[in-house]
Length: 474
Image (cartoon, rainbow, N blue to C red; front, side, top):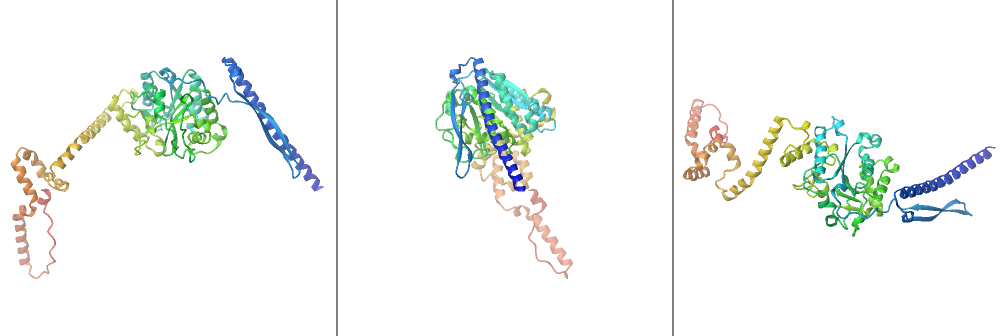
């Protein structure tokens, strides 16, 4: 009886598993066909002929049941369409500025506790002013308005925001994403003329270049040796940790829409990643050859310079923008923003700042004093070095300068009297004890008198004479 009940239970489990497997496969087939028909209807509504949709029918064979003496196979035909992964129409080799969209997403203005809150409006103004200067489109969104940022890391919200930008500006050629912890420094840099135009893009792409392992990039991942410029859909840079998703350019094509759909796949969302969406993108670039050949890797300083000690990644005067990657984790956001806000103040005055975030008068005076001090130090350093090299004997050493304030006070008079300078240099070369002989003689006489008054005291060994206060002053 027990054996019979176990046999019945086992049979029920096997039947349920088999039925579930068949149902899942049929469900997948129905979903694919449904997606195909929806794609077909959408293309017909957009005026795209059905004959232009590449359709592929693939026969897949699965092992349905297998025993020691018998194997049963099931073959099914799966109809697929590659319209979502086929590149869009031929790109514009010299896109007009109105076909470039700058996307800015942040929640700084609604979070006063943030270390970047004091410049939240100025950061927006910095981006918007640059877009208006060159005629680019500008789209701003609040990260807190997207459900994905409430369930996962806020960085994931860039994916639906990018998709929204493509839908909002369907005629756009390129979408530029720049993280909110960044500033545009060189307003003369033109996204089209200095990057997106084909002759510029062709000269800046890294070919046969190793990707830096990390952020999802595996070892031995290399960029293509040849590119079809019409088939480039993502422009990105990398640092010592791998690729960085803080500054990226997406072409507004069907391929990019497919990329965004796969990028936000639930299997990727639910997995624990160190660098969140950035690591997933690196994983796809490393493991999807069809994606990798459509990704252009460029210099970090070209589109994504850092405030760093690393020379190859550090911002230099004239670079386009600066990104404070990881400043929130390291607690250096305010320090970096203060540093480069002062640089912007020198270049543009206070016009780049929002009126509500202008520094107070005392802060302005303090900043101006610091800037003037730094400038004077920079100007004086070369002169001091030249003087030290040309007149090594006339320049007193640093300890002598600290111990001789009286000579420093008389130095202006000596500059007007060349003869006194020569005599002073001779005096400096003579032992200082010769200048203090009268005083030393007086001290020696006092010691002799004290010894004569106390003849029965044992005298301690003579200690080396310490310089007197007058010697230290001189």
